[in-house]
Image 1 (tube, rainbow, N blue to C red):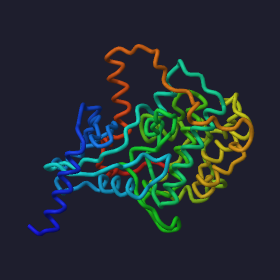
Image 2 (image 1 turned 180 degrees about the vertical axis):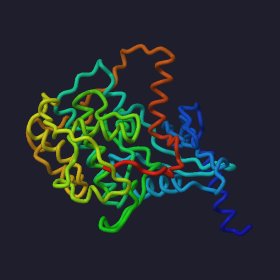
Image 3 (image 1 turned 90 degrees about the horizontal axis):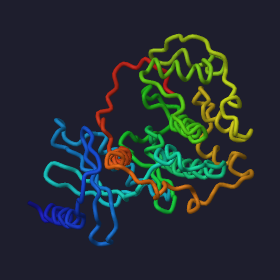
Amino acid sequence: MSHQALLAEDINLLTEKRYTKEKKLGEGTYAVVYLGHDTKTNLKVAIKKIKLGNMKNGLDISAIREVKALKDLDHPNVIKLLDVYSHKKNLNLVIEYLETDLELIIKDKNLVFITADIKSWMFMTLKGLHHCHQSWILHRDLKPNNLLISTTGQLKLADFGLARDFGDASLPMTSETVTSSIDMWAVGCIFAELMLRTPYLPGDSDVDQLQTIFRALGTPTDEEWPEMSKLPNFIEFNKFPKANFAELFTAADSYALDLLAKMLTYNPNKRISAQEALAHPYFSNFPRPTSHEKLPKISKLIVETEAQQDERKRKLAQAFVNSSLDESPGPAKKLVF
C-alpha cells in the first residue's frame, strides 16, 4: 500500500473516531440516519450511513450527487456537510443536526402564523435556493419536511439525495430533470401550504396529480405554453377553467397572490426565478419578514406520547434519508413542472 493510501486511511480512521452514533432516527432503503455526537465540539450531529453493500455496481450515483452538492454549497440557508468517512462497506455523511422542520411547524395547531412569519420562511427558502441555482445545482425534492429549522429559527434546505448539476437551460435534458424552474414550482406549493396550513395540490398517482393541479389552477392552453403538446408522453386532459387564487387564499394580499401565481406558472420559461422572487414587492412591502429568532417554534409544553415522539423523529429523519436512491423512473405519463 502506498504512503498516500496509508495517509488517507489514517485520516478516515481519525474522522470516524471523532463521531459517536447514539441512536437511530430513521431508515430508508439505502440509508440509515443516526443522532450522533461530535466529541471534539460536543455538538449533536446527524450521521447518514449509506449502505453501499446493497448496491451491485458500487457507489450509487445519488450518493455521489448528494456529497458533491453539499460540498459545493456554503450558505446560512443550506444544511452543512461537516465530514465524510467510510466504514466497511458504508459511506457516512456527517451533517449538522437540526431539531425540527417546516412540516412539523405547519402541522402544530398550537402555533398561529402571521403574514410576516410566512414571509420570513419564504425569504429564507428562496435565499438558500438562489444559492443552489447560482452554484448550478437543482434540488428537485423541495417540500416542507426537507426545510429544517434550527433552534434559533434559521431555515435550511436539506436532503440533496435527488440533487444534480445543470448547465445551459437551452440544452436538452430529460423530462424528469428540466431546469431550475422545477424547484420554483415546488416553492410555490410550499408557499400555498404555509398559507393554507394543509398540503396544496396533493395527488396519489401521476394522472391524479395532474387532474388535481388542473382542477385547482385550470388546464394549461397552447397559448400560455406553446411547447406543451411537444412534451414526451403528452396526453390531453379535461378542460378546467383558470383559477382565481383570491377565492382560496382569502387572507393573502395582492403581492402574495401575484408572487404565488408567478411561481405556479405552467410554462417553465415564464416562471419566476429565485432571484426574481427575492426582488418581488411581496418582500419589500409591509409587513417586513419576522426575524428568524422571533419565528413561531414547536411548543415545548406539548406532552407527547412515545408513539408521537417516534413519528416526529421519523418525519425529521425523512429530511436526511432518501428512501429511494434509485431514481430510474418508469415511463413518464405526465407533464413536468
